[in-house]
Image 1 (cartoon, rainbow, N blue to C red):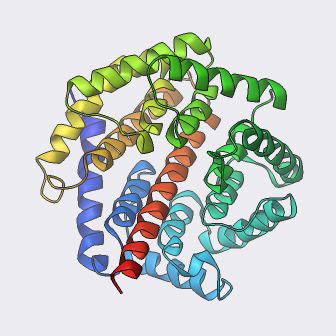
Image 2: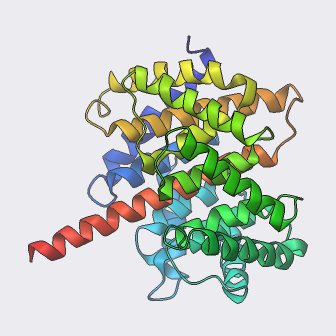
Length: 333
């Protein structure tokens, strides 16, 4: 049963998306619209067009000519900064500084570098940035050694988040590999999505075999409701696994939320995976808030991390969609 808080969040998401479509339907892609609406909803922030447009302009005007921020990334970055920082313009300046730190540490310029910088900005004090960047690059280098064809710049953000852990690099890499192997034994095909899932599950503090079984159970539960999760969206399974003892309840809520969204105008024909990602994000966020208020979870690296993980995965999906659209347009000329 959808509780009042979750119902309020769903309504806020639908309302925010409706407003965004009214103003930006022809200038933003559908995925970007939904992502911006989701970020506002997760942070209980009311959308104000003037404020948003001002920050979008600021980002564009303070970015280099060939910067990714001058493209579609400015719309999602504006939402991320407005909803999380009291002074989003200053936050953007800090974001650019953190991005330069990442570049100095060996990370290459890419559409995913900004999300890595955002993850760093959310989770790392300025005095610890250099150390975190070094550990993140060490983790990324090891990921690349183990999965050369799967690891690329879309793994930058998760490397930054994993580097927050107090665990040593070798232990983290070992856990990632155990997760990957156990998930494969549970029937998940080897893929980039599975690698991302194996990264997420590193945040779950139980045995790798149990994690894999739990994740398979979540997958099967959703599949029985005709909500088959494609490999590109395996992160959904990770977000639910992160909820531990509350994951079973969360699965039921996700199924209900998807059903609710499908009955809402503008969602019936949206991609099943997108509706499922939105539903999972809203449900996971609700549980994180409850745990925080009950002192079962401190405010909270894991809460911040889930938001940053969702941002990372959505950035990958938007970038892939944009590349596919551009490729199709080129092929048609």
